[in-house]
Amino acid sequence: MPRTQGLLVCVLLSVAATVAAAPSDTAPYPIDDGLAATVVGTPADYLADDLPDDLDFSVRTLDPLVDRDTPPTLRYARPLQYLLVTQPDPAPLAFAIAGTGSSALSSKCVLLSRVLYAQGYSVACLPSPTSVTFMLGAAEYPVPGRMSTDVADLYRMMGAIRDDVAEETEITGYALTGWSLGGTEAAFIAHHDAQVGEFNFSRVLMLNPAVDVWASVQRMDTLLADNLDGGINGIPAFVARGLGGLRQIYASGEPLRFNEDFLYQAYLTQDPDRSDIAAIIGLAFRLSLANMAFAADVITHSDVIVPKDVDLGPYDSLDPYIQRSFKISFTDYIDQLLVPYWNRDGRHVPREELVNEADLRGIGDYLATNPNIAVFTNADDPILSADEVAFLRSTFGARARIQPHGGHMGNLAFRDTVHAIQEFFSP
Image: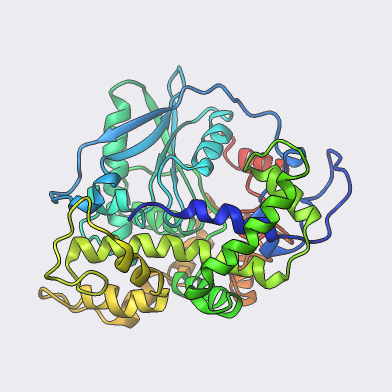
């Protein structure tokens, strides 16, 4: 399915709230609403200004880690790639795991690479197991969502990257980070490595992780269901409202650039209903889910979105299947794709087991006693409940950096966050 996240640019214009005055070096993150922070991110005046901006990134291709034919309609997602930047001298290698639906080439991968490179690390960024690229080239079981198998696939890909990188640079150790779902997966990878011992990570940092993955994504379902008039059928009207805001800003005569500063200006000048902000976030997650669900259905012939007897070619219309994909909620994905897949072909895995596997509380004792693992998140992150924030505080203690504001990944590029990440990864 073609990537459709670009549609969100129009509706992002409808964000607004009260913000701080002109920043100083000690100014806090300026957006005090978690939903708005999630959408807007970090304005330019609040960014770290001491990161390298001339790194020699390379996009590396791995041979497929699984033997699988690529359906014609998914050819756009080949080959299996990762993003790499290496130090000129021997250095530790930090792996970064992308969040839900993201490839290894996302802007957050680039940011984390710059942050960690400045601390003396070579950095390799992996795609999320929920990305179509990973599902095709790295997933033994191409229906993402079972934590144990997704972690095993990531671990195997990390080994392949290690071998690929070692051909040209000396690796002196390993570290690990990830954001959102990738942050949760980083914890489970560290737990797995503690038993297997291939990497012996010196540092593991979870950035805005979900505690209970399936509870978090159901919150995203609720944001969309409760705040988008007409449900999925209301998307055209929602986008049209955003286009109206676009015309207003464009008419001001300022150069039009779709970036954090553009969104920040919209945030300062527009006056939307807060429900629009919530709908934007729910829609962003639904776009990622739609891509994932469509690909999982096509690869496994699950007969949920595309009928089994339909053999899609590269030029066939996907319109009816796109509509079906958008109508699938995360709960639908679990019940119609994930659970049935794990209970066919001789497999028998109860729904409860699949859900429980993706909860950090299942490895709480390990997280509480490992001094090399830390978590950075925000108290107003919309993917977390108050009880889950309390779990992170009590489990990690001094190793938990929980800011009052920042939403979900909104303050990742904020200078204080960047400096705290660098401090954690200092030798």
